[in-house]
Every structure is written in C-alpha cells, then in structure tokens.
Length: 303
Image (tube, rainbow, N blue to C red; front, side):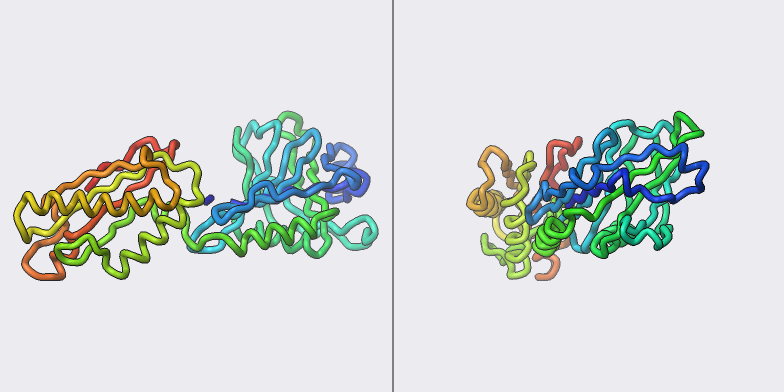
C-alpha cells in the first residue's frame, strides 16, 4: 500500500493571524520552529514511500504513498492527544513571515474522528505538497474538544523541505504499479497436459514474484493446483501437484521461504467451467495463488 509520508513544521514566531484577534489570543500554537524544522524520508521502497516530520508537544504529520494501480497520496496528522469528539479542522495556506502582507487562504477542511488520527485524501494531499513546494506554510486550525475557548493551530513549515521532497518524489516515481490487493488472489492458467503456463499467466506470475520479493510481511502463500477432465484421475492428480510445485519453486527463487508456501493438488475436481471445448477446459487448467499477511484474520481457502 505498501505508502509515503511527509511531516511539516511551522515556527511559532511566524504563526499567522488566521483567526480574529480575540480568537488568536486564545490560540495554542504548535510547530517545530525554524531551527528544528527537519524532514526525513522514513520509508523508501517500491512498495511504500513516507516523508515525515515531528511537531514538538503535538505529534507528527506524514505524507504517504504506496504501490497501486493508480498514483495515490494521503496526509496523516498523528496527534499525541487524539480527538475526543467528531468535528472539522480548517486547513489554510499561509505565507512565510517575510511575505506577511499576503493573507492566509483557506484550502479546505480536515475531518477529525474520535480517538483516531486524522487524514486528508489524495487531492488535498497533493495541494499541500504543491503549497509547500511554493514556500507556503500549511496550517491546521480547530477548536479544542476539551476547551471550547481555545483554538489549536498546527503549523507546517517549508524550511528544509525541498531536498527531502525531491527524495520523496523520486521514491514515488519508483513505486510498483500494482499493490497487494492486485496480487493477493491470482489465477494462473496452463497449456494442455503440461506444467507450462500460458503467456498471459507467465506475466501474472512475474508480477506476483516481483511484489513478494519486496514485501516482508507475507505470512502464507497457498497454492492450489487443478486440471481439466482429460486423462486419468491418477495422472491429473499428479499433474495438479506438479503445477503447484513449479509455482512454489519459482517463488522460493524470488526469496520466499519454503515454510511460507503451502501446496495442494485437487486434480480434476472443482471445475470452474465445463469440459466440452478447449475454451472451457483452459479455464480448469489452473493454479490458484492466495496470499495472506499476519493481519489477515481469515486465511482464504483454496477454490
């Protein structure tokens, strides 16, 4: 989902007057400050990219992107003290102190969920990135859920942003164009009476192998082999096991441990189509690949 993270900070001394003067007087401001504004790419792999920064006494802001069919991005506002109610925060773009004549601009809202970190979706996440790239300072403001008289302002600084941003975007450009959900259930098809995959299934298996070579959180890969109804039952049973075994051998070559892979042959049982013509039989000649992670509560059963 493998993901990418970016954390930003704004100097307290540069905190803008987003609200009216009375409200600003009651605002609690959090930021890393100019001298402590540091960025780091904490995850850099073909599966996930994360750029982050700590905000003293408040928490952390992260930008995350992960391997997927579509380019994705999210901002996570991690708080030491999680919201105690459901509400919204306002997200502003604020000019740095040397451009103080430029008024803050409202970008949108950030939902606050009770006892959860808050997140911005793809579009707003890219907006924040481009604002930072322009040297602006995104700021998040909301009413304290324990003290309605106080407004909390969390500043996001562009100080020291550019170099780590370049590294982050380099990571993003190298993400796989498919994620775990795209390969967790894969059906491979075979030539007649053979352990030779069809050309399309060879590409599928290469994609599965590439993903698994990076993901260190795989718990179990279940391989179930099947045949069509041609040939004797005994021969088909042996062939179904051989098909699953060749896939296992390939995945072990990609770095998986044998203990992570379980194979089973079902012969000509459990057809997914008829056996009256070649098109139907080709659907029955298959190995079903099912992959689970430790957080997957229910291990998929073979089909």
